[in-house]
Length: 418
Length: 95
Image (cartoon, rainbow over all chains, first blue to last red):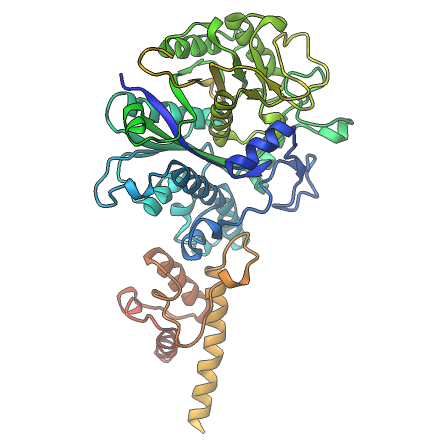
């Protein structure tokens, strides 16, 4: 099995655009939550979301290209551009002939344009009002397709849609393609822009969204006693995965090694996690096994941590039973406390962050977690970032449809194990 | 003065066509005016505006509705300058 390292990263998030801004904001404990500006939310019970501020697609693509794309695809291309530039591989790509896969996660695809077209149709129940470009813009694979078109990436082009674990699963599949020797480089991650009138209303109706300040507190609050749901967010995160020997030969900068992954399904429910947490435990254990490490080796866990009642209890149960309960277990933090829940992008931006934790030996905090829920008895970093040696880290993504994905990261070791 | 009437008609159709194109090619969430399409009589919709085959269909549908005409796809594909499209619309209206 070939080894896989991360040599480039890009991120568009509610707390910062670009990997450096995202990382610094995460360490400071910034919150990306704001009153909704992307649509008029006057009539909504929930009026907060985690929007990406000041995103200008013209910095990353031509106007005649981005006017044909939904916001989620624009963010995906933007993050891909950052990652490809960061890795320094653009000039190495043979534009006519290459086998570079683009594997991207997106749970919903082009919601905004889809909803706009439905409204155009409903105005006069007139099908002729619907744009002929609708299918091309709404399709979830518009994001992987536009990344391929912009950078001439001619390998397998796939968008994976497994709700909140889409980004994690995409990275897992891309990793497998390099491990197996199919390709020596891959572009992977996730993109999602769900803050649109109908999609947002769907989440509101599902009663998974936090009321936040209306309830008199800051939100979202993963693993906190008073948590009341997640804040919907938008983002894109892209990673360049590269075969270790190739990266070494060209003297590439390496963030971390992607040592293992798992992907499984609890086969339980479309929206609720299995309270036994057996499927989550299984996913974590399988990923550790592929990485060839034990639970004792792990120093940090980037939790799925949505701040819903059900997720956090089940996830804490899974983490506790694999790694140990209480303050003796490895450090845990929840990025969604800062970025909101960015659905199909979540696993990707959290992979970016986890790789940075491994590289820099600093762990960002879980904000708003003032009083740890006794039913979530794990070692959550709650106030300030913690500086500690991180040799191995795990990132969890648990999605609707009992769909789980776990990634294991580690510092790059040479052949002698040092 | 038939010529003056024709000029006036072309100008009027140009303005309506410009509005259709501006709506169609508008850039979402975009504040920068320099990135919005610039549309003049001698603008080439393919070379200057980047209209592709899918957008051509949207443009035809919109013209059909706005001017109550029935453009032919293969013929429409040969009209790339705004002035040619204006004349084509006049031609179709007179049919």
